[in-house]
Image (cartoon, rainbow, N blue to C red; front, side, top):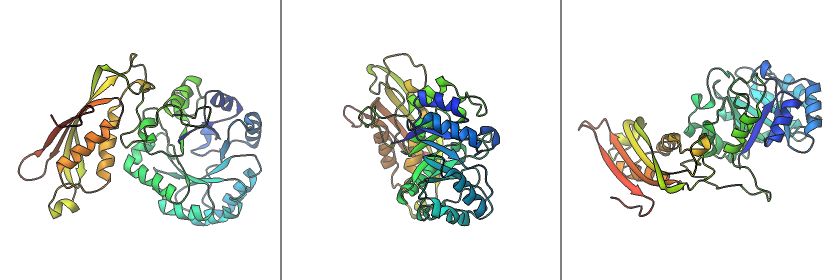
Length: 372
């Protein structure tokens, strides 16, 4: 289950995040860098205020990659009652030595390493983190004004990071200037954490967090019910979760959501060279969806075209496909898995065969799942 991590600057913001449903309260100073640390007084007061009502984590600061600095930071924060300590792995220095330096301390307070998608993250460190007893690993961005996480790594790349974390027994987190439209796209990967700061502050991560912004992010991430189970539908499907709290919609009222002229490299075809060399393939998809029983007001009320394009990208990332018909069928099945999708029209065209544009168009429906 994915939990919502809210980064706060102190006890006042922590109280808002707590009252509006954040799962984890994460302390950082947004004016002091990507992982700017708060003062000892702020940390102590926030931990005391939140108590046992929510886990509280904290960043260790934008530390140079020097083992002695890492060891001292973990020693300093280890007795503060934190659920875990976040340590940033920046380019340069001695990252492996830093990880090994804090390994003897990992049993006292769980440690989470933060790698930066916009700073050539070294994912080969994941097995070393697991060996050193780290609790988890996160992907974030260091340059908050340079773009969101998805500007630097696409869903297939992020999916591989999540899978690798699971393989090594590490809790996996994703963050990095995330915005509300990113949430349903990332939930499909089922990370352990999604982390937010700017989205809780009206886009300005140095401003105060806003209750309404916290509410929107919270509403887009399924929580737990009173018995500890998932509240609402679990749509852990490749196509992604839907946005609407009324997932079935009204089948008597429909909308059409489409993606046109999406051109992507794909390894597709029966010839040997088509197995090895990607070629340009154009996709056109139209989805007929049942309309929610209320007018669309925000992201929770719509079926996003991102579900279509992200799904296609993830299918292509899975490897070679022999036939365009097979790929078209997989796209249709992926989208029909969503409870609001009633009918799908899929067009797949190979653009580089030397025989003009070739491909297939098919239509599938929820009722019969057969061709028309």
